[in-house]
Image 1 (cartoon, rainbow, N blue to C red):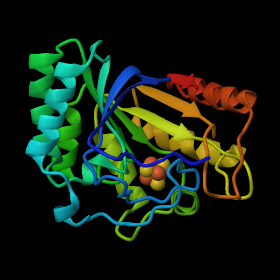
Image 2 (tube, rainbow, N blue to C red):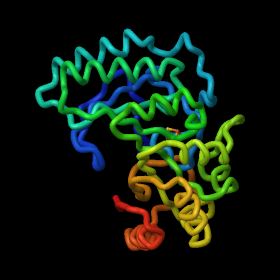
Image 3 (cartoon, rainbow, N blue to C red):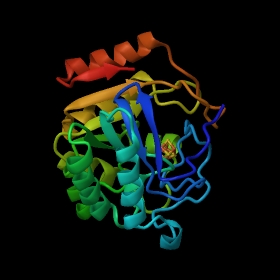
Image 4 (cartoon, rainbow, N blue to C red):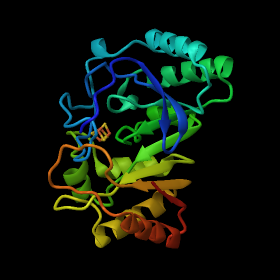
Length: 251
Ligand code: SF4
C-alpha cells in the first residue's frame, strides 16, 4: 500500500528506523508531491507535478514554516532526536531553503537544543552552490544515490529534464560529511545486478561518504518491474563497500 502525502508542514514525531524519534518538517505544498525524480519505488506513488521549479505561490512561506515548527517544539512531550526536512518530495526545491535552514537552527537552539537538524534529500540540487551551503549547515545530510551509472539513474530514478547524473555525483563529491542512502531492488528494472553494484561502489569511492545506508523495498511502490531483494544480498553489497574502505549499515 502506498503512503498518503503529508497534509501540513509538521508531522510526527515519528519513530524512524535510522534517526530514532524524528519531527518531520515538510516545506512543500500539502497533498502534492514536488520532486525532480520519479523513482520506481516511491512510497508516495508516481510523481505528478514533476520539476525543478515548483510554482512559488503553492509553497509555504518561510515565516509559516518557522511558526509551525516553533509551535510544535513548544508542544511536544519529548524532544525529538532529530528535526528532519523530509515530506512531500525534495525539500531543497523550496527556493528559500537556505533561509529556512537558518531559522530552523535558531528555533532548535532556543527550544530543543538537544535535537539535531537533518535532511533527507534526493541529491538533485546538490550541484547548486547555494543549496550545498545550506546542506553544510545541517547536522546530518542523508543524500540519495541508488545509481552507479547514468543509464541506471534514468531507468530507476527517472529524473526530470535538467537533472544530470554527472552533476549529482560532482555535487555530492563536494559536500563534506555526507551520508549516502541507497535502495536496492531486483526485477527487470532493478539496480542490484553485481556489475551495477560494482559501478555504484566505484562512484561512492569518489564521493567518499562518512556512512552508507542500504536497504530494500519494505513499503508500497508503484512499479511492477522491481522487487524486494533478500537481506543476504544487502549484506553482500555492504561487504563490497567494506572492501572499498566505506562504512555501511544495512536496514
Ligand atoms: S526522490 Fe523520494 S520523493 Fe522523489 S520520487 Fe524518489 S522516492 Fe519519491
